[in-house]
Image (cartoon, rainbow, N blue to C red; front, side, top):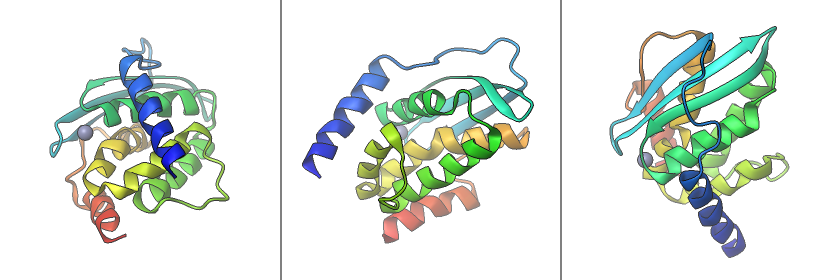
Length: 161
Ligand code: ZN
C-alpha cells in the first residue's frame, strides 16, 4: 500500500505540473462546466463526439492538484473510447474513489486514485471532472456542482466507508 501511496503522489504531482490535453478544444460538440465549492476547484470539459466515440477531449480549469490531475488523467484515458466505454470507466472510477474499488477491475493508471478513498474531502476533488464529463455527455446546460444533492451523496458515501 505504501508503494501505491508513493505512486499516487508522484502521478498526481506529474499531472498537476504537466496536465495532458489542457486547453480549449475548438469545434467541440460537447461541453460542460463543473465546480467544487468546498475546495474551489473549477473544470471545463470539451469533447468532440462522433458516431458514439470520443474523438477528442480536452479540459481547462483551476483548482487543487488532485482535481487537475484527475481531469488530466481522465482525458488521457478516455480519448478514443466509445461513450459506453467511458461511462463504464466512470462507474468503476466512482467505486474506486469511494471505497477502493474491486481489485479485479483493471483501472490502469487510474488505480492510483484508490488512495483518495481515505480522504473523504478529496473525493469530490477527484470526481469533479468525471461528473462534468457525464453532464457533457448528457448534454446538460447547467453547471455541475459537487454540492448538488445527488453528487453530494458521493462524498457522504465516502465518509461512511
Ligand atoms: Zn480540490
